[in-house]
Length: 169
Image (cartoon, rainbow, N blue to C red; front, side, top):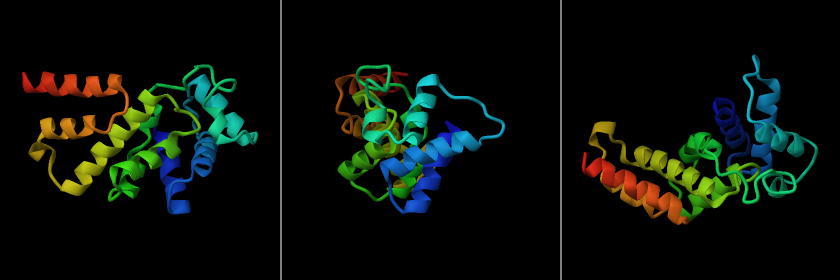
């Protein structure tokens, strides 16, 4: 996750914006040059290999190249997304979502994975824009706003349930 985060940041700096293919190549470059190599999931390794073999990033995260029918719904997209939130800190919700989708296009195509990465990026974005310390954050209001960023009922329900649990704690 750290390597993917650094790779995304490097790609954003190099290109001045998100470029799905450049980000995917950057992920692979960072993993290839990592020393010591700490490993990655086999599906991620396969995606990076396919990108470096010239398979379009629009295809690498889906069958027949990827083992899961809907694409990965794991948390890797969200785990690497913070640099994008910094770069797109003033972006509106639609622009941020489009940028997130491009950043994780090669590997995380499942709608729930996209929602999770959007939620994570929006949370980072909100913290940057509000300039508040963690103690000053209205967590309930933040979670309510983040739930509106979700397109899947599953991710929205997780955020709403989290807000509910925190409110009753």
